[in-house]
Length: 235
Image (tube, rainbow, N blue to C red; front, side, top):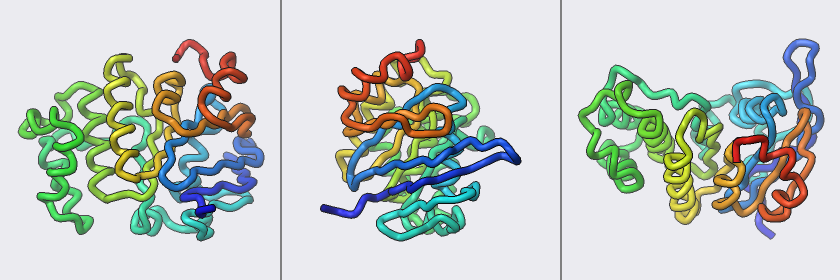
């Protein structure tokens, strides 16, 4: 059995005296898409910051490819293949699409390769390549954020609330691309509230409530048993 690309073991975390993660266990197998679902305030985004090295856990461990990386810095995790598309997209609004993409060349990726990757997954970005990123739609900005992440050739891609603020049709389009990315061998963890859309492209799902993972399994199984929790109007 292959070593999981990501394994979170009994992770606790707090903001001051308020404990927000209470013993989280989560596994992302190599090459799989895992949907992490649950209501707001459940701890999903906090878990993302711990996995990506932006926040320290109070206790517990995080393994990436079998190596304990609990205290690793974000830049070190990025070098070994962990890439996060954070909530809110984070593009440079006063730069064009192409200028946003070319910035990735400073991380050691050849500019033509960055552009080829972006435009092959998102042809619309090629049409918008001379447009200021801040003038594009929310969905197009999300495509740009995803493209910048893909340029780093990630082993594990974390998508935090990919669908936030976007129309359902755009969300469907983005998740169709997630499936294409997964088909290339990239492991993906989707932190999401659009449960049905995320589950359609996922191999496994987990549900977080109150700082704990309360259910895991195949998408249909999780949806059947936890639909009242994960379909809170954002299906």
